[in-house]
Structure formats: structure tokens, C-alpha cells
Image (tube, rainbow, N blue to C red; front, side, top):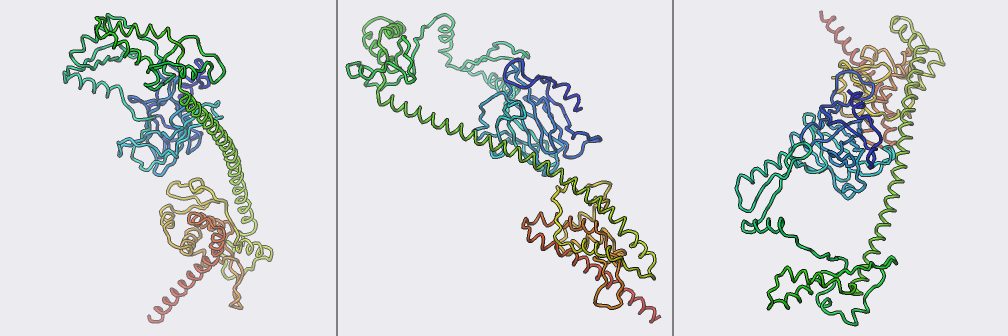
Length: 558
């Protein structure tokens, strides 16, 4: 399905000029985005995108990472240069799943997303449109997409059974508009008239709405269709007070500006302010009160008389105020450009750091795998053979070699072991009701979930040790492999497997890291792992001795 989508949207770079736009055939329909190399049925968290509904727009989806997706929107009908609107639905989500959606082929360089606007979202259980927090929305020029403008927003799905819908802003569909106009037309209002102006490219109605009083409707049609009204060109560049526009004396002549701010000469055409036109019309109307000329003729005479007047004048105070305002806006624009350039450099640096961090994480994983393989080899060469022989032959007391004993003691007494923090989903794999802890160690999934709610490091470590080794193995082992000094004739028991001890420390480290980030506290709590396991071995031995005493007492009574 991913290949078909790529073939359907195979075009050139998405730009703003015609001929360089990306052509996308149609909207996605129940399109499941799977990770590269994945084979099998989609799981929870493999998002399904759909835009095959009215006002929907989403032509292509690319899988970047497990938490990031690139979205491509389709251009407007018969105008491939404009790509702004998007509206799509997402389902098959997982609770607490966090994603980042990048709309990568926007055609606008300026957008309200840069000034605090945010996309809309709703779901099946919450059908009311709401805005995503603006702090999670970013609009920027991305170098990874040929410096096109990209809008990225982060979102966290909170309900698995819901279908979420995202849109550019509040959608208003064509069907909703037609229902509204049909409702108005059925009311037969005198001041409302609906006519068919034509059909669109997709054979949809283009309505002409006329809203006016019934008695003016006929006059309006006649004036528009039969008369040609000459409207003079009025300039909005100069504004004067009413008291200053009625008389142009010597003082006003001194305030005229023959040159513009940029040094270019003004055009030879004459332009007057709105106040001058109003004053002129009022004067003409006052003169024509006793005459029989129509208001249209007076308006035409006033507009023709304006062409003979000199250049417009502007008060110096108003001119200086406008000049100061323009300079302030220029200064603010320079500050904004500097801030944008600073933000762009910071984003580039962060992108470089993220790439370096990804390389370090992959290298750390490789080192961890190599370390575990080395531990397995060391276990096969030094630890497994003697331990199995001691379990089979209980009468013989075999003492480990000094070098081996020293190696196990150093490995077991290591209290500064800090496993690298690895995401839980990447580390613990669930398969067939089992949880993989690493190094080929599998535990029951139900017991693992019960262990996660255990209170206290001591109880957590003891229960985890029982899950990994079992009571039968623990009662015949020791943590360090060294005989106790309390008894003179004590026989040293074989030590516990070093790689399994490391797994216990890693699991406890992951648990502690979720509660605190203080390295001193983490080291202090991890240093008690050996103590907890020793206590568990002693408890098992005590319970076994008590059971033997009870059985011997029953035998004596019999």
C-alpha cells in the first residue's frame, strides 16, 4: 500500500511556481501507515488516515519515525499553486500515544500560524471543535523540504476508541451552505432573492444573493443594468480636517510638499482628499438648491472641477506623525527579522544536536549488545560448568578457582553499575504472553505486570530474583560465591550468574529513573541489590529449615 501511495504521488518538488508543484491524484482513504520493513497485520498505534469526506484534504502520508509523520495536502481545484486547506481523520490510535504531524507543502509564506493561530481538533466522543494549544504549533521554513514552509504540531491521543479529526480552521461545507440557503428561500422573505448565477467546474451551484428592501429592488436593477454612473477617482493618501479643506490660503501653500519621502517626484496628476471632495460637493449642492439640476449633474460637475485644482496639501503635524509611525514600523520589522534569524540558527543547532544524539543512542545500543554477548561467553567459559556440577553432585564440595572467584566477586559487588537509559518499549519485548528482559531471559507477562505495582525496592528486587532464578536455585546459591565467615566449616556455594544480576540491576535502574534523576540517590539505591538478594536467600533457607523441622516433629509424633 505504501508503494501505491508513492507511485500515485510521484512528481517534482513542491514549490510556488506553476510546473514545480507536486501533483497528488486524490485524497487518502483508510490508508494505514506501517513502519518500514514491517510485515503483518496493523497493530494499535499504526495510524490509519482518511480524508475521503466532504471538505477533506490529505493526499499523501510519509512515515518518518514512530512518532513523526509528513503530510502532503492537495492543491486547490484548477489552481495548483495554492495549497492551504487540510482536513483529515486519524484512527487506530493508542492511548497516551504522542505524534508530530508535519504539513510540508504549504504554499503561503505568511500565515496566521506565526501569530498564534492553531489547528482545530475534535473526536467522536467530543464532537465540539477545539484548538490545539499554540505552544505545540510551529510554522517555519524547513531545509529538509527544499526550504518550503512547514507547519508542525504535536498531539497526544488520550482515547483508543476515538476517531480524531484535524482541520486548518472551522470547516464550513458546501452542503451546509446549501441547506442554509434552501431554508432562507423557503421562508419567502421580500428582501431576499436567490438566483442561479452559473455552475462551477465540478457542476455545483454558484448562487447570486440580493438583499434589499422590496421597493428598492426594481430601482437597483434599473440603475445597474441601464445607467452608466461615472465615479470620480478619490485619493485616500491625504486626510485633512474639515476646517482646513474649505480654504486654501497662503498658510496652506507653505505646507505643500513637492517631493515624497523617498526622493522621487510626485506624479503630475492631481489627487484631492475625501474632505475636499465632500466640501466641494456641499458647496455645489448649496449653490444648486434653487436650480433644477439633478444631484447626478452636480456630482459630475464637482468631479470635473477637481481636475483643475492644485496638488493636495497635508498638515505638517499630520505628516510628521505619519513619518514617525512609518519609522517605528520599520524599526519593529528589523527587530522581528533579527529575532527570526536568531530562532532559525537555534533550530539548526538543535537539529544538529538531535542527529548527534541519535548516533550516540545507536552506538550505545551496539555497545550494550556487545557487552551482553561478552558476558554470555564469559559465563560459558567460567561459570556454567562448575555450577551445574555442584547442583548434580551434592556430596562433593568443590571450591572455585581463585581467579574465577575473584572475577565473580568483582562482578557481583559492583555498586557503581549504571545501565544506559533505554526506552521501555525498545527494551522489553512482549511476545506470546512473555516479557523479554534481555540476554535470553523471559518472564511471565502477568507476573511482570504485578511486579511493576510492587512497593519498595527491597520487595521489587526479591520478587524479580524469584522470577528469574526460582526458589530451588536461590537456596543453593550465593551472591558472591564466597563462604560465610560466621561458620568455620561453611562450604562456599556457587555464585549467581553475573549477566542475570546485571539484568536485575537494569530493571531496578529503570524503575528508579522514573521516580528521580538524582545520580547520588540512584547509586545509593542500586548499591543495595546484593543485600536484598542475600536477604531473600536467607529467607528461603529459613523457610526450608522450618519446613524440615515440622516434618520431623510430625514423624516423631507418629
